[in-house]
Amino acid sequence: MSTRRPLRSLRTRLLVFIGLTLVAVCVAMALTTAFVQRAYLMGDLDGRVANAVSRSLGGAALHPDVEDDLGFLNENGHPAGLLAARLDEDGTIVAAAVVSQDAAPKTLTAEQTAALADIATDGTEHTRTVPGLGTYRVAAVESGGIRVLTGLPMDDVQRMIGGLVAAEAAVAVAGLAVAGGVCAVVVRRQLRPLGRVAATAAEVSRAPLDRGEVTGLTRVPAPDTDPASEAGQVGAALNRMIDHVESSLTARQRSEERMRRFLSDASHELRTPLASIAGYAELMSRGTDRVEPVLAWRRVSAESARMTGLVEDLLLLARLDEGRPLQSAEVDMAALVAEAVWDARAAGGTHDWQLELRLDAAPSVLGDQARLHQVVANLLANARVHTPAGTRVVATVEAGDGSGAARDGSGVVIRIRDNGPGIPPAFLPTVFERFTRADASRARSGPHDGGSGLGLAIVAAIVSAHGGRIDVESAPGRTEFTIELPSVDAEPPVLDALSGPSAPAPARSSRTLAGNC
Image 1 (cartoon, helix red, strand yellow):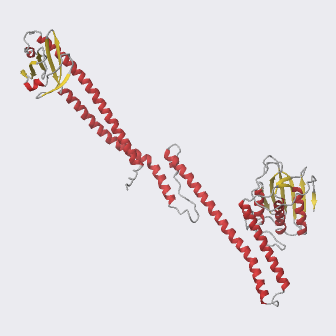
Image 2 (cartoon, one colour):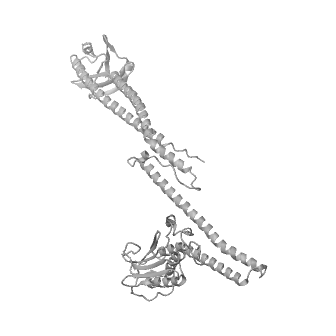
Image 3 (cartoon, helix red, strand yellow):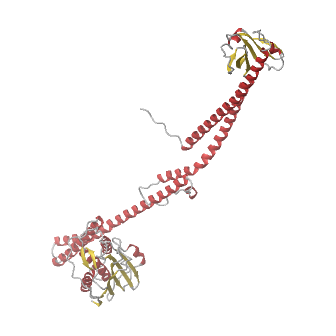
């Protein structure tokens, strides 16, 4: 089984790629320069060969009848190394010699002459290697029955081209060394931000994200998040991802904390009536002389009813959270609020209950009448339980101004206002959370003292399920809950939570009321 070699680092790959590119460029430039220089030198040499052939032909023309006469080589002006030969009619060399430095021309040997055979007398230059003399550029011509062959050595051209190639190679090696060093420094400096980004990512990956509070994760430094560079774009993207991870984990932790608190509070609320029922049952099992049966049964029934109500509230919230569909029907909110105020007056006669209808027509919404009645009843019960006797509680129904839940600019607004002690500011942000109480600051009375802390949570969940919203403002002497719901003429809300069958909607009314109930 073959194993795959690990990839080199980006820095190494960049340096290798740049190095190979520079080598290829240098080789191409060297070959091009050598080729051009060789073509130039060969052209110059061919020109001198042509001149030498013409001069030899002119010298041989002085003795046309003597085919082996090379006397013209004794004339001055011939360069050392010049090679000349006379040919017969068949093109065979009959005499050949080479000009020597400060000496008479030297006749070529048979071996050297054989290297010059088979050269056509058309004036075309040829390259031949002559043993003992080196490489020559030769050409043969014929004129008036006179045939001569002349050549010049290529040693100077070859030495010049060799020197040029050697110089270019030396310069290329030095240039590549310098360029490689500069590229290594530049690449290292340019990749430093990317290295810091990688280090930040590695540090974040080592953080214990599966437990505890996830805050203060390391971020990429601001200089490494410049969007003008690729590394900066990566750093900025990593910071955004870390922010998203941190906020998501914080939200998850808060949700888990709320769930743990919810379970703890629910367990505590259920444990109290269960303990009471168990205590009375044990007393009754020991004999009727310890507790009066009627009183015991009353207490057991009361605690059982309390526990049943709590379980029903928890079940309602669970179903609301699951998004089960609500019943949908047209509901006259004026009549519904009026009924809820009359019920509240019957339950708490020590309070001053008032109803105000500020509208020209009966305000209708599309929703679950039973749950909407529960919303208003819970708010009125909250005002009755947490305010002292004599407190004025005003329920107002009015047309919306389009700034709230209504989607087409119309809606229904319900306000429940009292002049009681108010809600402490510390509890306002969490007043709609489950099992939230502000008992220390608001007076309570009646048989429902303490409550379960689920009433306002249920109110908020039902209003949200109807596509509306609820707000609260509170100060000493004034507490007001405001509910905004889309009217029946607006776009129908998506009723995303449960309920059982609703009672039929009451008759619509267009009356405007204000006064005591």
